Length: 590
Figure (cartoon, rainbow, N blue to C red):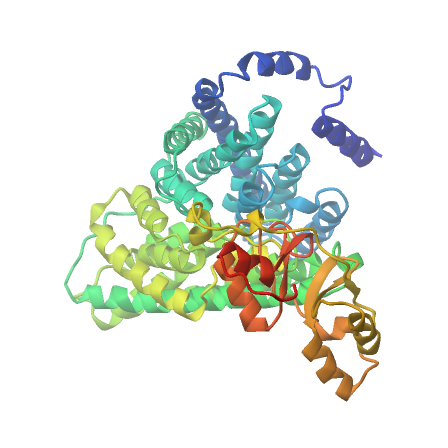
């Protein structure tokens, strides 16, 4: 009953209707009316507000996830706690995510980018609240995911809600999302400069974005709130390092190789497992997170260091207080625990796990190197620090953010050059073996196609949106090949769209149907187009891409689909119209 009332209240809030508890909406609406024509002046002030609110939200994240976890499953506590808490937490939160907060599942970074590029900057208050509480409960129960990714979505959500409540134009609301994201990272890692780079490098995909001033202001404000509330304490306390011998550069390069390979293994394992979970029936979604909770609980029964975010253990590695065999074990166990927990649908991010796995990997490489070459290598802690950056750069694909983040954590310039070497090698290997970045791949699995940097910068070229037309009649997926051929016989078109209850699912042409009829006319069209990928384009893409995909698939029509949902049909683009736009007036059928 309470959840129903909460849901109703949030829905009323999002629709703008007046409720008895909405005491703040009336003065806020008056303020919005006065400031509607002064958006540019309001923007910087709003960046301060977003930074402060996001900083407080991240502080609450830290207190809830770290201190609650220390009390719920202490290392020396009863084993049954370490088994039952992750299982019970993932089961309860899985139901809440399925029933009340479906958009709060997962990391938060892909969802933030989807809101920016595909959903008009809209993140609802329901999602902000659900993300905060579900992630806090998930991490407090021992699920080894990170809080930084969810904090990004919470910060961006706060920015989105405030911008829309103040009546800002959609373009301004969208511009506020990286402001909130930067504020979240600044407070989560205590690294304001790295937060600015992350917002521009990863969220915006443009280091020259016009919102730089607001991003810097929000990042500094959030960082200030963190330090005022929790004190002037870095995320990790590490000793000062120095380069012992030039031979170490080779060891750091080897660490970059190891970091790249581990990054690829992490990404492929997570994406592969998540694809399998997505194939299960929809009515099992609420129960799926238990798979991650059960695996984590079983691992935690024997190795309690697997539970939770684990930043305390990262600090032990950085200061040389962890044995080699435990570091090796944690690299393997965390790899499977994190990927299973995320793929099964638990709420949490991959920032923290990437740093944890990187620290353990670097500690292993550093310990071995120091054992073999004690007079020519630094202590293992230096390699653990560089390993954090290498794995982070390989998984997240934000190398500049990684370098600046580690530098801000240590305030030691001596680590910069080794870090750059390891990051570059790791990034090169991971991008070669896993070409699609993890956040883009996760979005594609959800049917969201984020624009590439090339697409975002192609503003002056011919775009599909200029020539797309309304979609014609389509063929249902349950129709047989023989029935489709009969229907095509009375039509001038040689290419047809195939749809099912989700929307458009594929494209078939006449030669394909004739070839399939020879094998079995009773086959359904849905069997011909089965698979997550089918030929399509988006409205903001170029006509050259449409022409290329038509030629590659030998079709004359391409569906134009939404970036937020690959099955949502927005129109079609035809070969005749594409050629006509280039001035090629060829008679033919579309």
